[in-house]
Image 1 (cartoon, rainbow, N blue to C red):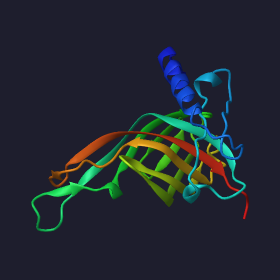
Image 2 (image 1 turned 90 degrees about the horizontal axis):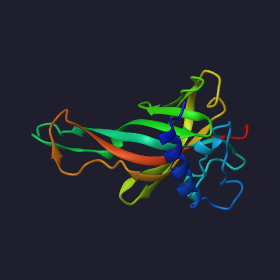
Image 3 (image 1 turned 60 degrees about the vertical axis):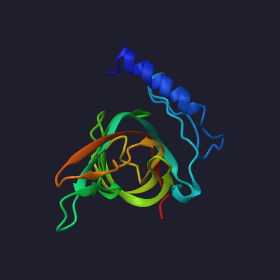
Image 4 (image 1 turned 30 degrees about the vertical axis):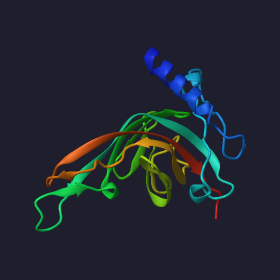
Length: 193
């Protein structure tokens, strides 16, 4: 159940996102599913053509990261004393809220509905770089588990990213760094092939 504080935060975030929502009905909208819907409205922002889901895809749900980190592990080349954090091996840990309630996003990468337990894993299909933030992505769902809000998801967009970039500078073997990030995740049901 949402607390008063989280309702206020979610509504404020939804209002800010709503200002950036595009007018195209195929790629935009505010979707709700319950009495507490005003706390879960998340608009679908503009999607770059390189990372759009297949034509004819239908919106399953949109979710905003309310708390999230990308955790990086130091990569040290053989024979070197120090290494660097690389952006290719981060592990997400995030709590999302949106049209279908709350979702936990974690390593895999995986997304699991806290409402009904449905779970998906996905892999990167395409990306668009964002200055000062992790890339926006199109991910293809690889596995489904359980029945529920995520059962129909075939593709996922990670949009309007902020933060989450691997730290600069040197590090030592095994050192980890968790970097806060924000984004909107949009789940899509692609037309049958």
